[in-house]
Image 1 (cartoon, protein in one colour):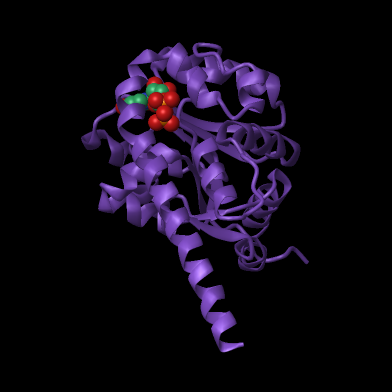
Image 2 (cartoon, protein in one colour):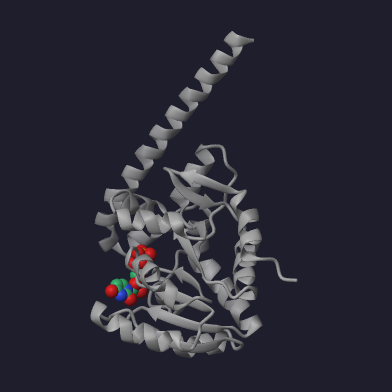
Length: 270
Ligand code: UDP
């Protein structure tokens, strides 16, 4: 019998830690894929968040995003900043980039012949992707797609059409926090779907944006490469990354202060 999503998630939650109060599931790629498999086998919709430092800072300033992240079923450490914070707190952690998990999930969907919907990206990017997906993942049933440039008034109709095909995987590339808000608003319409916000992944897969070369990824400097390649990100990154860094360092110093006080008092008692 297939394991239930809850039992698979419970196992995952044993490796749930916190970064600045936000939950992060320190899972391997296989662990995350097991959650996806269990969701499909049990026909249960889930929301996967790919957490990075910018998102944490945005959530601190936006109650809606804060709530959505905390309620997600699986929250993976997408960003180098999140992994750094976990390591500083003494946890063993590796990055699990959202773009890579999404690729592996597409492969799994192809192997299992699952129904997939793509939402987001510029119209020409999405059109290109619609031709790439069947080439790369021939087993996938691509049952719907929608570019990312629609108004709120159009959403009802769009969701209605897409939900008729009962998708099992929906990748939503609208950027943060738009994609998380979309998932929160419409999860109820896709009760069997694994929903993942994938940011700029459609641009990467179609080659309209280049992902950082291996060297940058291995050195946890993908964010720096993105900053160089897309300088318009500077304002956003520069306002959030230092904020994140200082808070993590502050929390770490407080934590180690508390630890040494605890052990001092332990010695006193002994
Ligand atoms: N996008 C979209 N609709 C919008 C705004 C953005 O479809 O209204 C798409 C955009 O074309 C791009 C992606 O969302 O493909 C955002 O990518 P980005 O790398 O900026 O995501 P983030 O850094 O927020 O993860």
